[in-house]
Length: 173
Image (cartoon, rainbow, N blue to C red; front, side, top):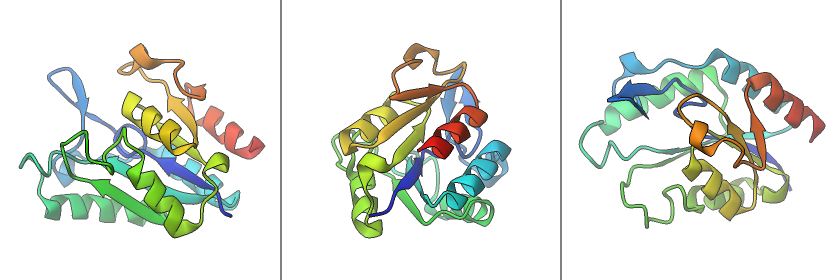
């Protein structure tokens, strides 16, 4: 069995876009700003033998605020910089949909496709939905604590304030 580092997209792989005081997803390629520390984290995770899996809700597609074409362009740029083994996207805005975080559907599908041992895998996220999806799938959750998510600080299985701390966790795993 293999192990994986699952990564949320917005706030982990790329910067969030603040709209009306709330962290949101980029809607245009020009708004996509990759987080350099994530590129280093991904490189180290691969060297440690982890599969890299991107798990992202993108409901702006179903809401008509983001085109599938623009989403594909963004993911091409991400893939050019981070060697993901798998990218899972849920474009539904229906929280009851099994693939939409906080439900574990995307993680479970990736686990089946990549023969993953979820108990030895990690989910790095920055939202309560990320933590809930990870816990429901049986992975170890890591919360990247930021200013905009301070109301959930401490709720991950592990809680980090920096990518350096996350790298240390992976090296000890």
